[in-house]
Image 1 (cartoon, rainbow, N blue to C red):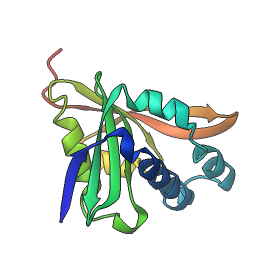
Image 2: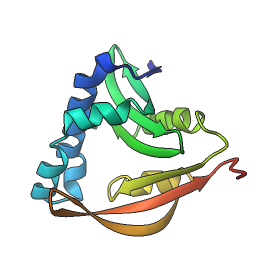
Image 3: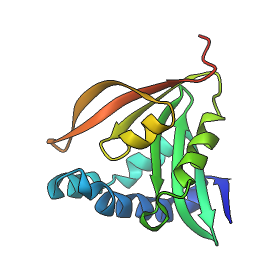
Image 4: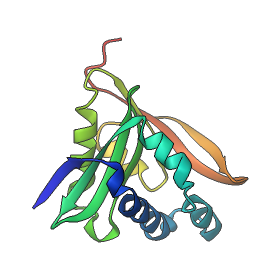
Length: 153
């Protein structure tokens, strides 16, 4: 049985390892080996500072972290990752719902990877534009997406 809990810094190493593994396995189908190598080299100090400014949620099954997502105060969903062995069983959907419920009155946005775009589209997000971003001078394609929930402003 899965449960969703709040992220705490004590989970940092496990969450970062999960994210790296997902990039190196799941995202590998849509990105080059060089892109995957660069993307998975997460700057831990920068990540910690960023995580402190957001609300994070963790999906846990049998005391194993199988998913992570976070959202900023402005409704920007920065991370949403699900363990490679737990894909396609609703964990991402449940994590996303938990994140969306944090800011039900905001326009929700995400910069979705090629891999994540179909999932976000299935959850009501629309592509606003395609982007080319650079990580350590290596180009990546992602998509600015948004979802209007009960957004009133």
